Structure formats: structure tokens, C-alpha cells
Length: 243
Ligand code: F6R
Image (cartoon, rainbow, N blue to C red):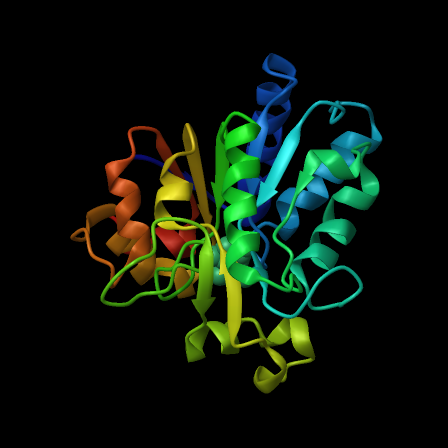
């Protein structure tokens, strides 16, 4: 795993944005896996800035987001669909067909997960998967536990994850859905290249486990050690426990 350290999360975000611009100009049909949450906010700001100035051509790019809350979709302010529209999709030239998102309001959630796996495969698989990491070591919504799910699935969110997401729901943890749809660990590991972003001291233990820990479902991100092309982009806080 390649470890990269940055003085601030802004420098991290602008570096990753520049790499994405390069990757898309090299391969205009890039298939991107995308995260939501606080960590990539600065990345999406950078991407909007560059897109508005014509530095990025999104017209053939495909995207697949990692996850979505069960029960929420377009029009729900707390949904990841709404987050992504505001953060990126409303600001770039992309058609709905280019954008892959799980539908948290699908009547049959298991069928929705299977549809998503098929859509990713039909797009040729994910070329570059960008990830955040939970303070508890989750990636996507693959939560710590005795076992992990390989494919896209319905996940029960742990209490700490619901607390960490309360900010998107007016600070009220009880409003955070109890379940989400999420790519599985194998879905993520099938990405040809993976870039994980982690910022802030709150992520230092998870990052230490990711880089130096044992492979364990108790720290789902540790499974990234199995992948041959992973870069962890860290700010000072998140890198604190690394030598
Ligand atoms: C979100 C996702 C999650 C987040 C993680 C970190 O799409 O997949 O794994 O990346 O919960 O969230 P933040 O960035 O808010 O600390």
C-alpha cells in the first residue's frame, strides 16, 4: 500500500482532484467509484472548480457511488443522492445514464443490490475506486463484525456510524436511517485501483489498522491489504499513528 501524507486536507483534495483530471484525460471513459461524507467535500469542491473552467470533460465518464441510506432517495435532503447532486452532478455535464447510484427506496432492496452489481459489471468494472474510512474502520457501509458481505447488500448501521452521520440529519441521530445499501468488500476490491482518503485525528486508529493491522472483519478496511494497487492519502491527523 502506498502511503501519502499531506499537511492539510485542502492540499490532499487538490492533489487528488488533479490526479482525477489526469486520469480522465488519459481515459475519457473512466469508471469511477465515489464516496460521500465529510472527507470528500473538499475534493468535490475542487472538481466543481475545475469543471467550471473546462479542465474536465465528464461526457463519457461513468460513476458508481458506494452506498445509500435505505428509505431515502432523490428529494430527501439526507440522501446520498441529494449530497451527490449538490456536490457534483448538478454542476457537471453528465446524463443520468452516466450516474450509478443505489436506490434506497427501491421496493425490493435485494433485487436493487443485484441490479447494481450487474450495472457495474456492464460498465466494464470500476477503474478507480475512491474511498473514505469510518473511525470504526468501515469502508462503504461494510461495518465491523464477525463476517463481511462480499457483494452489494443491505447493511445494518452501527450506533457509532449513525452518530457520525447525524450532522446530515439536523444533528438528530434518531433520524439517521438504521440501514443502508452498500457495495460489498469484493465489489470494492474488484476496482482496478483504489484511493482511500482519511483526514483528522479521529481516523488515526482506523488508519493504523488499515496499514499495519491484521486482516480482520473487525476492521473492514484491513481487507484493502489484499489489493495490489491501493494508495492511502492522509492528512497529519489521520497519519499520526504511522511511523
Ligand atoms: C460514504 C462511505 C463511508 C464514509 C465514511 C467516512 O459514502 O462510504 O464509508 O466514507 O463513513 O465518512 P466521513 O468522511 O464523513 O468521515
